[in-house]
Amino acid sequence: MKKYAVGIDVGGTKIAAGVLDSSMNMLSVHVTKEHAGQLPNEVVDSIEHAYLGALSEARISPGEVAGVGLSFAGHTDGLHGVVLTNSNMPEWDGIPLRDIVSERLNQHVILDNDTNFGVVAEHRYGAARGAGDFVYITFSTGVGMGVMVGGKLYQGHAGTAGEIGHTVVAVDGRRCSCGKRGCLMAYASGLALRHRALERIQSGEEST
Ligand SMILES: [Zn+2]
Image (cartoon, rainbow, N blue to C red; front, side):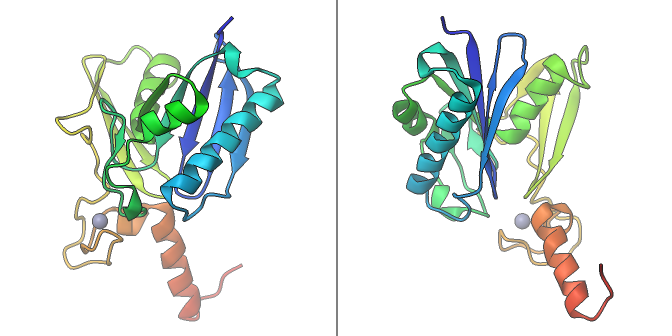
């Protein structure tokens, strides 16, 4: 019987796959960092490894899986299952990742970005239960925001509603990976925090 779901998160630095039962209990989590900085083909291999690893740790067979939620840290067009421009991974522009992974895993796959899945999860199971209108902001490798309006995920005409990472917060500020200056992501993302810490250490500041 198909009574399990698998969630796979493709982040900038790691891929995590988890198996859930119908009561949303997490049965296993398998994390791999082997894909960091790799091209789409290699990342698809890593997605498969993470998927099979999580199934094996939960002692579940692929035939028991009802579907896969695939989240991607970057702009996505969830309706068409396509990855859009991502300044951290430019090779990904236009890749139909949902269908590629669906074929590889032989499973029904839903693709969206990590933030939009976060919005839906917080609405159903987390801090925003009962709220119809709210925003959800993630700080990970990048910075993202998802929007729920009237109890529905608001995706916008291209699937990127609420993406605030490249909003300019400091005119002529720090250079961002997108090429502009002063984006929020150039200050508040995981990558930016690392760069800023390195700069301060290199300029002689004390650090543990
Ligand atoms: Zn930017």
